[in-house]
Length: 372
Image (cartoon, rainbow, N blue to C red; front, top):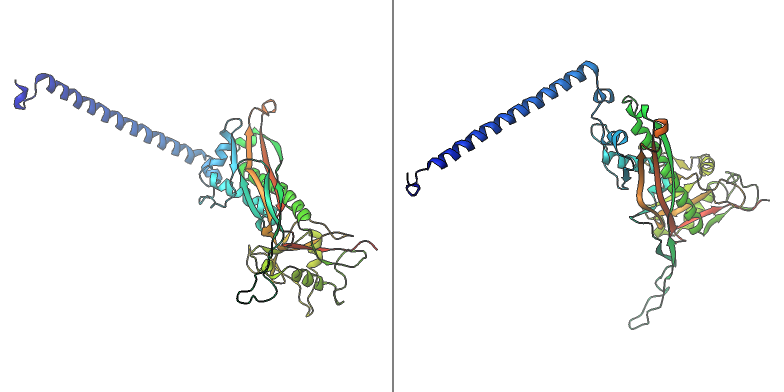
């Protein structure tokens, strides 16, 4: 047979027959594999219906974070981003949800972080930051045609924004990690977020105290356990009004302008009333919104001073001038080997954080007088 006439040779015909047989065999193997996979699924579903598995006990698909808690290798970590992300729609705690949860718990514990400017860096090298102590301003008189334009220079210096490390480690019995009825990852996320948030707040409050150096109002010499007599002119709520207007209008107009105070100061201010007898502290009308004082948000920061002689219990101004830095994110890591002798898995939570105030005039404080 001549191949030039378009007729297959015996060898070519045999090759096609072999290809057809191989294709048939491959199709049969694929069908068998699909049937085997389906039988496995049916068996697994039957087992879950009969005995109840982790999904049923937890009310949803096992989370990625839960799997990491139980199965990851020694030294594996969960680095937490600082941007907000939606929680898992199924109610689980997937990777994005854990990132969001840990940071949300940190902010929930440390309200000041909701007002400060946040900076994230991959490394912890010290960064010189520009700080303005005096701002350039227009002249006090109009400029005539061909008139000289007055000089006005800002006074700038630099302040180093360094970071320091804080953290902790905790050992968890492996029985808890294997017990699907206990929300161990939820507990770990809450505790880690809150504790790391408190460490970031410690740096932020210290930077505010060191960098915002201007007193807006000062109370008289005395016991300094509060704001004086509410019925006396120049005391009580009047101190808050004076502190409010000690900050210039551009700062007061900022979306980050707020009152900040310690727990003890908040207890004092909540009892104050305006001249017409209304409480100066206005509770939020919508869940999730901040309470207000004189129309501005208020947050409580336990790291601030309590009332006492020569203290700074109440602050007010534009908190965006406070820059809080986190280097390398919030770190959350595990090791099965570290607690091997006690059948434990050890978790550690770490953060490298620092903060500086970049405009000393943006936030001012109420200063209490010296002791009598």
